[in-house]
Length: 160
Ligand code: FES
Image (cartoon, rainbow, N blue to C red):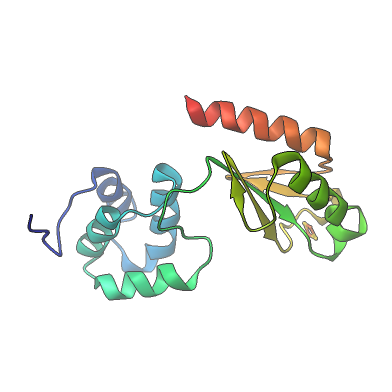
């Protein structure tokens, strides 16, 4: 099978590029939007973005590999980003991380089943720590009970 280097084979990525006026300056926003829709950045999405924005695939790969938030493979259904910057540490973020690792059977920076745990460094919610980011939703004063509940509801939502 022959794969053309510049093709539009991801209609979702094409629509997102069009929504941003096919502007190369919007590359980061486009990558975030495409990843939010697919869960990760597929080869087809990157080809489509390169073609739509008229930039090289090498440029896109440079950007994608530079930022940790971009994923090239399917990961856990739900990623819990727990803030471990100073203000959140002062109100129990490290204890929350330990409890989350036990509760979900994984470690920070890893994933188990449907849940991945990641560290964040200040989510801009310092007065309401410990802060947790799930997708685009920010939560404050999160304890392990609330985190379990959020993870369960997000996992249910991801199945539908
Ligand atoms: S230190 Fe956690 S949100 Fe700012």
